[in-house]
Amino acid sequence: MSDSNESKREARERLPAGTVVGGRFEIRSYIARGGMGHVYRAVQRPLDRTVALKIMRRELVDDQTGKRRFAQEALAVSRLHHPNTVRVYDVGELSAGRFFIAMEFVEGIPLHEEIHRLGRISPRRALAILRQIADSLDEAHRRQIVHRDLKPDNILLSRVGDNDDFVKVLDFGIARVLDEDTTTRITVAGYVCGTPEYMAPEQARGEEIDGRADLYALGVLLYEMLGGSLPFEGSTPLAVLLAHQNDPVPALPPEIPRHVSDLCVRLLSKNADDRPHDAASLLTLIDLAIAEFEHLDDPDTGDPHSETVTIPAVRPRIERDAPTLHRSLQDDDDDSERPSSIIVADDLAEPPGAIDGIPSATISIQDLPSTPRPTARPALDRKRLIPLVALAALAALTTTLALRSCEDAGPTDEPRFDRASLPAPPADPLPPDTARVPVLSAPPGATVLLDGERVGVTPLFVERPASRAVLLEVTLDGHVARTVVLPELAPGQTPETLEIALNRQLHVVRFVSDPPGAEVRLADRSTPFCTTPCEHAFATDSGPWTVEISLSGHESRSVLVEQTAEQPTPVTVTLSPRLDEDDDEAHAAPAPPRRRPGSRSGAARRDPFAGSSDPAPTGDEDEESTDFPVLDQR
Image 1 (cartoon, rainbow, N blue to C red):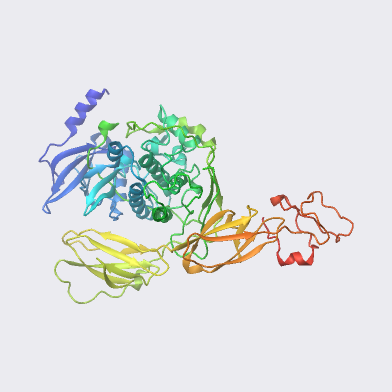
Image 2 (cartoon, helix red, strand yellow):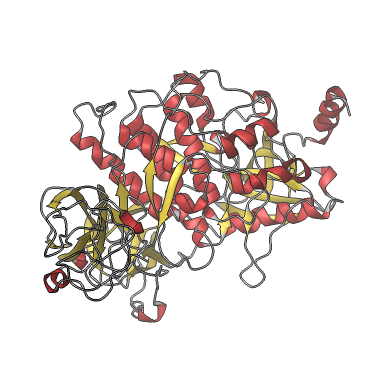
């Protein structure tokens, strides 16, 4: 069909102003066309509430997959209640078999227009925007919803109070909703859905994905905000996908603070295991990155020549038994289709299923190209679908960014909310314009403040004004405080139970050894959590910590690490070479092991630089060496 014929057909399909949909939504104006429907500005009767009304396109009426996708979007959004996610008010079906969704109407501008207007967004502002998107995704991923099409077109910046950058996440039209029993997903046979410029490598290969695919898209968003251009481009969709699979992340402008660019590179890891393991972990990293600005002379540029990576790895969502984070200190370092203002959207989620251990990463970035990237942002086709047959060869491609997963110290626990612990609601009738909100926290016992006033300790019922938005703060010793904006309630609306997971506060320790390359582990654990020089984030309520620092061919050191006001807390040790009793040569050849005159029977000489290739202990080593055993490195 030609573009002119399609435009004519689309014009005939649009509903004129004054049309009443579902007996209660009066269309006022046309906004835009989305992937599966047309979006209108409408007024809901009798509430006189302005809504964004998405109506399924006519050609999808006989397309069962399309109808399922449209219904899936309604289902996905209806589960989400985060302030940074567009809310769903109603879902219905027209007589012709077309579905419609009535959603929150938000006035604002898409993020891509702001990037185009400014060229680049300052690091501090970019992190603030990214944090709100991640907060929205945290709820969506916990509810088994993966967006799969995050891009600047689907991020709306609106004004709320004094905040000109209040984020709304839009367009869950191709969101993946995991079925808790069958773990199925809706796809079009032979195709991968998404926008190539923001698509994670595993998503392009047609593999099973989880919330980490959305985090990769956030890495592209962050890169685009900071640099004004996309990290990976190409003349065709396939060329773009190949670049995502193969190419290293291009260097950001040198004025971007090192700790911000390192976070961006981490999100753009080719291997999903090397990214933060969920949105909650990313929120921790963003908070640490924002806090790092306090230590920089220029809060928007910092020191571009800093040799210290200041982003720790993944952080636990809640209740971890042991230290969970560490990072390495190694160095090397189409527009016409875009809506001009508003589009419908839903909220975000957390990766499905339990995850054993939290992945962290040792980052080594070498030879990043410094070629300037073009500043013009190419028009993107919102409907590009990539045939899997053209992507079959991508599965064998290897990653070029060197990141190494490290084993975590403990299992991942989902937050547990005990609804049975809620006290009985007060018997007194509520005053006018007041609603009673059940509030739970994990762990419980957190202090709750409503608009700055203490109202009690979780679990509890909070009485709040119904006709306006309120600010709820939840704090607990040893945990990061959470702030939640509760929107105004519709007349007669009953508030849902508010469940708030509190993340543990972290204390970062920097480990340095001479010589470097030593393994650092908790004294009661066999698995090292990092290799010097490195930094590790401990949960503040689990200290102090006794750690063992060991290097093959050297005497191990046991160190008691306590919390200090300085972060990262420095721990520096010198490791002495291990010498045989009768050997004056510290660097004798390690292989083959042989007896020497005057040495004990079976005593093997160890090369302090031989690493893991050292021969195993024979059991007859000198007695004094048993005070500092070489720990099992298998």
